[in-house]
Image (cartoon, rainbow, N blue to C red):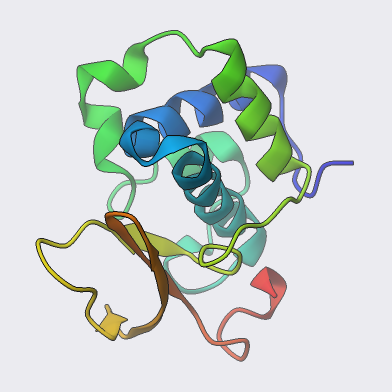
Length: 140
């Protein structure tokens, strides 16, 4: 059962975004990026109050994803990427992104906060940040 409403086109869109943002991090890294994406649609808080769909989330501007401005985002979704997207849409969560709304790849260590949000943890090159339960209860 899905935790957010979606269309088949949005599954493909999410699969492409997950690959474009984290293919170098392997399946686990792609799943964590997918968690952040789904959480942004779920949360209805902070920078993500007006997001109502995966399409809104993918193309959010400002505050969206750099990958949508790169040619590799526009590659066709592969079957393995589609399966990963379906897993996060179904509600599977992966630490440290399980409650995350942000991630980035620093040049060194992860700062303890990023845009006033607490570090949840690091996976390979990406640092993941999550809101407080008070600020975004729907994520938790």
